[in-house]
Image (cartoon, rainbow, N blue to C red; front, side, top):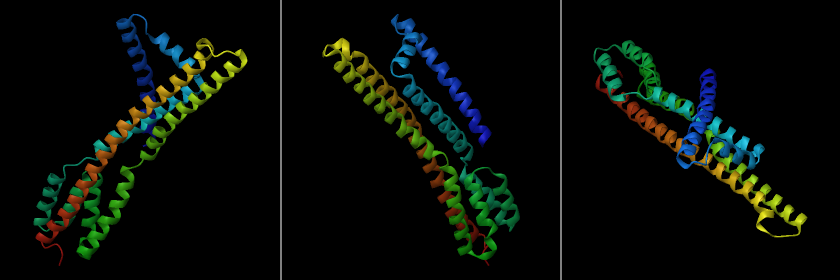
Length: 243
């Protein structure tokens, strides 16, 4: 898992830098004036310290998002097909064969069904208890990494707003030193404030979209897990596994 996340981090960093370069080149070709150099200047003008942290939030957040999406796609199982295969073994009284089917199938749903089958000799109450307990464990594994994505979603705009405050403080300092309220005096500080806020909000919006998709993906997997768990107990009762 650590190797996968490290790989995702490198790929996302490379993709982010490459995407920015391509976007800047296309924008420069279409507008004739807005290019990578201008974006780099805006990045620096926004205060490279805070802008670097905002960019780091984007890279790390996307790495966690991509890792979760890949993991959840692998964890997605056709529960109806799995239950039919298990029922086919249970119809022949082959509990061990049903356990082998569940064990050989990847994903949290198959793992929960395996735990239920493993406790089939203890009665339906034991099966349901094992499913509930192991389901909690699998739920925690599915939600692994979401807290970090939430953290980056919260931190990115905070860093932007902090840059805004610092930019406004700089603008007021310039006014105090110059003793004049002309636009040229405060333009630099206000520009810093606007740039840091915009970039911080953009990062938060991007990560929030991915976060909501991941949460909906987890909800779908959990619903299928619950349906499969209920279906397993029914299948076991139909095939007289509980004696």
